[in-house]
Image (tube, rainbow, N blue to C red; front, side):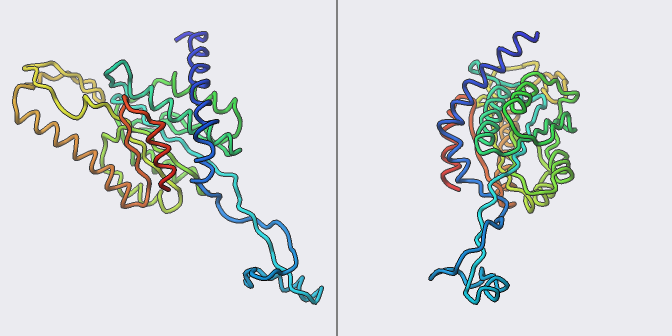
Length: 287
């Protein structure tokens, strides 16, 4: 993709996702994700109904009259976008690839965070960390993130969510709002998610295509494994083959839902032909 086409695509995504974040998501995002804690604001005279635990005894003794410390919520947060860019994200039907929806969701979340003056960072992962952009504020930083989401070419086509979560825990020492955006066709990340979820507020957003759920009966078909690059001859006419495929698929989906729920993390499922706006708004309001 040449520079002109890239800039045009970045601008198109910015217009669409910024409108969503400005009018829909920023308010929901603000109320759904609280600040890291409370920061000291001022000392004032005690009023009936104030928590006696907030009394500042030094000031009270000085003025011989009860005074309390007033705290405000610390609003500034850090959002980390963890985006799966493995081979399976290039799958798509109905004129829409999973990676296109993933990019839109990530851009919408980034602009929502910007509306709240929060920092945004990006981790692009396959079975290794492909790219890390440390958290920063501002529109130009968000546009850099969108550009990388569109343009970046991964070295590997495989997936390792556990490795990505381990990297998150190693780089983000303070609590962050984390969105892991993937199709979650991976397992063995329960332990690393449990550790990361103790420190961070994590949500898994599963983006999938309806055509992935079932294998159609098309007889003998050459199939490409998007994550290994291997081409295999598959007998889709075999009921046992189709049932085995469906079992493996649903086992991974159930693993995602159960693992995230058990760790106390949020779960969002959205198909490429559905409105991710509706799904995300519903999730924010349920928090």
